[in-house]
Structures are given as structure tokens and as C-alpha cells.
Image 1 (spheres, one colour):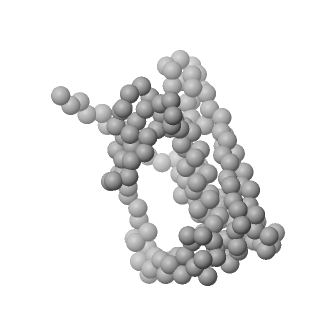
Image 2: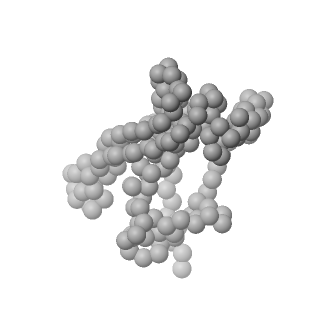
Image 3: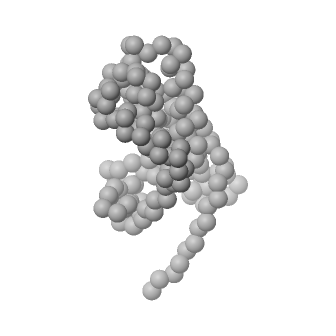
Length: 166
């Protein structure tokens, strides 16, 4: 069953589930990324040896990356849970669309907040053997178990510090 859906190893997932049930702290994640200004609106973002770029002429900007992160997270949630349900996924694409207004970002007073005011996610899944009940269950799991969806839909604290360096 480990090759039901390319790259999803169901046995490893089930073993990790059991480990987390036995010791929930194993599931704790606390990544630290660092973004370095490159030029203009372009940043180099690092997590250890992993490097990506945001902004500038040839990269997704940070707001687009939020949508990309949401869509990619839904791909992971759908394929992982489909695999756990023994559903063969032939193809999957997830489209994310959102609206925001950049007036506040530009410093224009009395303007709406600069963040997304709505996001739409549309998944196109080809899984011919899946039942409509399984698809509804996958939809429920996408809403309930998606870390990006959860992050975007509930308030949380942000602590911003700006340290002057010479």
C-alpha cells in the first residue's frame, strides 16, 4: 500500500500516528526561517540549507505565496488522507484565489486592512474509485486538519521586534 499514491507511505504515516498518540509532543513543530532583503521587494528566505526567494520580478510575492502555501497544504492533506482511506489518486490540482487591497500597505490612511478578506480553494481530484461519502470526508479533513487553513482562520499572537544593528 506504500505506493498507492506516489510518495505517500501509508505504513510510515500510521507508525507516526501511533507514536504521536503515545507521545503528543513528538508532533510539535517550531521552525525558524530567516528572510534577507536582496533588493527592491525581493527576499531570500532560508530554513537551514533550504533557500527560496520571494518577491521581485521572477518570484511569487509574499501574498501570492500565502495562497500557494494554502493550496500546497491542501494537496498534502488530500493525498495523505486519500492514501489512508486506500483511495487511488490519479491526479490532483488545487487552485487558490484571494482578494486583498494594498492601500494600507502603501500607507494610505483610513483604508481597509492589507490582508486577504476572502480566500477560495478549488480542488480538482481524479479518483475514480472514491465514493461521494469519501470525497465529503476528504473535504471535512481539509478544513479540520490543514495546518495552513487553521493558521489562516484563527487569531494568534504575533510578537514583532526590530533590533537596530550597526
